[in-house]
Image (cartoon, rainbow, N blue to C red; front, side, top):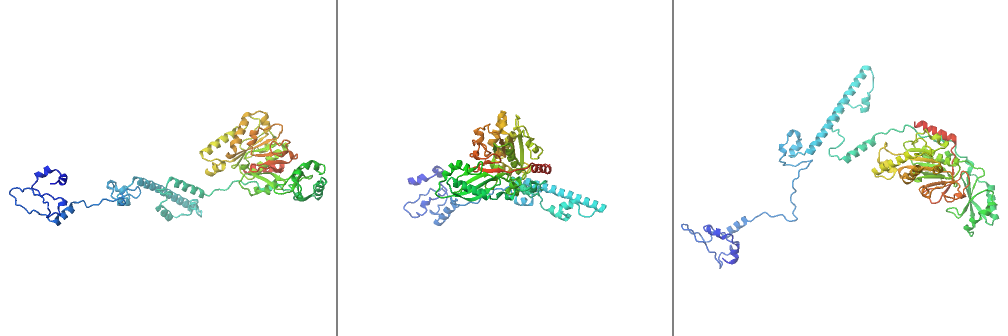
Length: 577
């Protein structure tokens, strides 16, 4: 045997002991029937007949060789094999060996057929059956109660449906039985907690809500409006103004006339070759020619090339509060927290939302005029908002605010401005709202009210401080620190300050002044609060700087008479009590 064949031989010593067996030929030698190399046969055992030298034919060799090989092919990389049977918690799987060990009474026919029973499904089914039994029991008790009421009505001779039938829609026992046969569970067994909460909120929204128990004050309680002849043009005065400009060598023509009843403004057109910057220096020369004690020269009017002359009318027409309210968007009674103050020189009503105004400062002026501005703001807010939406807190020593004491809108009773803990309850409310908004992951009052129920909604709070100069003079550090905290964090939390500072000799720190977004200034010789306030006239004349504009507006406040104010407050005390 050559070297290559000897290397393939396996355990030749053992094979030598079984020499009587026929050796299986190596596949390479099967075709060499008459080749040069012949395989030497082992010696036969004595006593046996010598067999043929080639007992296995070629065809038989091929069949034996083919039958000995492993015929099953291994799957390739891209071959998709059958998925392994994984039992499902819902549908089960066939062939579960443990399925036959369970009690047949605890499993449904479908589970017995499938051969698999899930404990999760069984627990859900058990809970569903308990709910159905409870619902069926309630329906039976309801039917018995209705039958008892019906029998009582028959005995007493009363006719008509009973209260239970009316509530149930006169359901018959057959309908009850039909309803009992169906599943009365409001939730599916596979419904997630998110779906259940969504289902509950949907049903809560479908519940009919009852309307308000009280109504807002009507518009007719505000009295009559402004006199219709307030905007008439005085031709004689127009001629005097033109003659005064001609006297100083500036020819002009009257282009338009506008007034709000207190302040009038003439728009004058000039020649194109005249320089407007020269007109501002001619005010001193015009004072001796014009029939006014004081006036304001506007060079130029915004949006035009004309100049304006504003002056106080010799016979003013007061602006009643009813005109401000009924001629603005406040008459629509929207829940937008808008307030009105007065009219601009262009005869436009000044109304502004409190949520944008933020913290309000009223600077200078006489006590009657500054208090009238506060009354206009408070009454315009209370006319459109109930106590659940608006709350008011007043810190003042003036008798002007005693009429607000018993209002349902009051957050607390009016307190003295000199008290040590005058703003302590407001500061506590500020901190509570700050913590609640942080837990709710919101930043402002509107976002918080959209996420909570009606009972948990927060109201807008207005804190009136009159007078701020007294607070600075009495050196009340705790109240000043509370004011600083409210100025910093109060606007997004729905807490707004309305501060009146009537004394010009008591200054305001620049840091506090910068945190007051809306500023209302009467005549101020130094223009500390609003730029241009030194050009105003004494009395009902003011400039308002709002946070959405960089140019102040000249506004004349409306008049809320004492009689109308008492009627409105008494109406509010009666309907919300």
